[in-house]
Amino acid sequence: MKISTKGRYGLTIMIDLAKKHGNGPTSLKSIAKDNDLSEHYLEQLASPLRNAGLIKSIRGAYGGYVLAKDPKEIKAGDIIRVLEGPITPVEGIENEEPAKQALWIRIRDAVKDVLDTTTLEDLIHYEDDGPKEAYMFYI
Image (cartoon, rainbow, N blue to C red; front, side, top):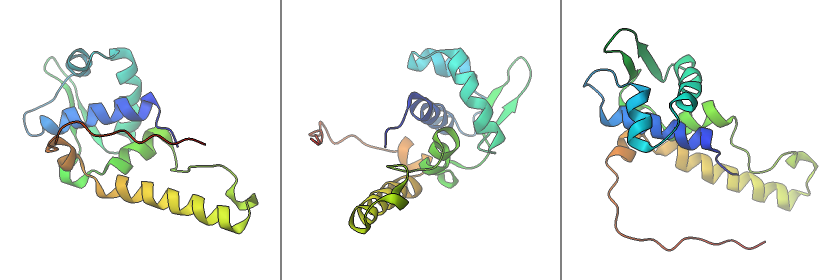
């Protein structure tokens, strides 16, 4: 499973709004500028997030977006599912042999568990413990 820029940038929007939660609306222009992203692209991502009830838009000169819920109530999985669709490592697993089916299901469940137990609150309070060795998978 590969998370596209939609999921990555959507998470960026949500983390930025979570950091400013309770301080009034934040414009997509400022989020785009702070993260060196396209404001137009962020606008395209804000619509499904708003339709899913994760963010609210505030109109007016000092308008922008705010989280629709507290950061500890919004899970990373909520955001990724809205922007990326269902969490599925492979398509058509029903045609696989049982051992491979079980593997794909375990992988899916592990990813879902991480996404569904990580809140925006967790992400804004994340502390970096230094460089990590990247996992490299060869197939």
